[in-house]
Structure formats: C-alpha cells, structure tokens
Image 1 (cartoon, rainbow, N blue to C red):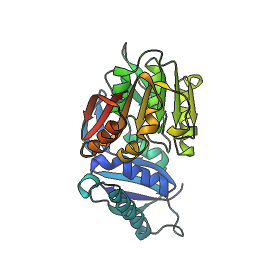
Image 2: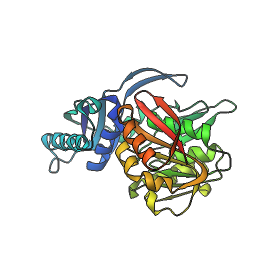
Image 3: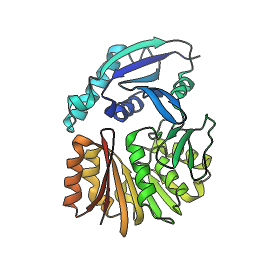
Image 4: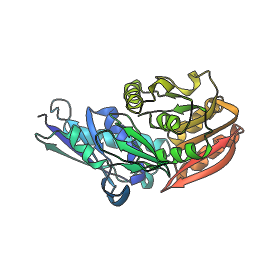
Length: 303
C-alpha cells in the first residue's frame, strides 16, 4: 500500500470546486472528499461541508507540509486578485498529516452516494447500484480527476436548465465539459448529438469513458478545445465555468448559438452574478431566467 498525505482545507462551502481544482492541478491527487454526507432515499439528511480533504501521494522529497500550505495560500491570493473575497473563499487554513497503508483512491468513494440532481435526473457513481422509477433518467458516473459529480449546485443548475429549455432532437455544446456529465445528460434528455470541449486535455479520456458507460459515446464528440475554436452553431449551450471566465468569453459563447438557441451559464456565486449580467448585456444577450440554488446562480439566456 502507498502512503499518503491527508490535506484538510477549511473553506466556505461555496468554494469547494475552487479548492478541488487546486488539489488536482498541483498534486498527484487520488481523490477529494468534498463533504461528509449521510443520505437516505436519495435525500441528503446530514452534511459537514466546510472542510475539503484531499489524499495526495506521499513524496517526502517533493513536498513538505509547509510547502503544501504555501501552495494553497498562494492559490487563494490568486483567486482574490480575480475578485473573490475572504468571505466567499473562507479561511483556507491547511492541516497536513501522513496516513499509512490505506487505499485512499477507493476510500474517498465511500462519501459519494447516488444523488438526485434535478426532478428527473439521478446521478449514480459507477461503483454503486441504483434503481430508478418510471420517467427518471439515470446517469452513471466516475469523475476520475475531472470535475462534475452531479452533487454540486453549479452542475445541478445546468441540469435543471437542460431539462427545462433544451428541445428534443437538439444539437448541444458543453463548454468546460470536465467529466462529461452535462453532455451525457443532454443526450439522455433527448438531444440527438452533443459536443463537449475542455481546455484541460487530461479530462477528455474521463469524459469518453463516462459516455461509454452510459452507452451514448456514439452521440458525443469530446475534444481538447476552447469555445472560440468551435465553428458549429448549436440549439443549446451549457457553460459551467468561473464567473470571470464566462465574462471574458461571452462573445465566443454567443457565436455558438443558433437564432432560437438557449444557453445556460453557471459556476456563478450569487455575489458575482452582476459581473456575468454585465457581460450578457454588453454582448446583446437576453436573460430568460435566473435559477438559484444555495448561494449559486445559473443564468439562462437567448439571442
């Protein structure tokens, strides 16, 4: 068995995806426990979600505890330069301890259970057994080192928008596809074809594997690209990215939309939605609906 560092970072729960990204970007991370949760009948009954725990391969010659702390402090400083506040991010205080002879690459999976992501969509980890009722849609998922488990509000907001606004037979684009969860959901909700792109080449194989598990691989094209590299126009677009990136690429996202298309923009803290709304207005897009969950928003727009 390998030895690991257990790295615990105290955060504001709304910053969980941000700190998870630091784990996978800077370390050989086997998994992140985003919350200690108890579920019953697909309903969350208890949660502790202000501490993220990552399990990182122990390499004494490469990382000492103080080095690890420094990485997280510097990452927080960089986020604050982008406009995030101490209140939004939380302390980001770091504790590091060595854990011996446990397979944390499997251990973290114990904390992720089947999740109802929307009225009809249920996300089931590939290592769990799930049953569904008539009219429900089952997505089997293993996120690997990619983002998008279906438990986070930003993903669920996109899934709600797909259910409500994406027409049957649509051609759909998933910008920042991560685990591929939104493209897969779109196909299972009736899209005829989807395109999923991400600027991280390492997630593409994960997304492809998930599409194969869900028997929709022949209907989705995953690639290492950004929005501005796509030449096609789509009936529905989903972009679950940080608010500042959404604002920066809003023009590129608009170019992907067919005349009658809808687009959902997510990954937006409630306090930051005005940044995205200003970009929406600047590029002549119209707000159709603002969806909210916890302290996150998803904005549905049209041309």
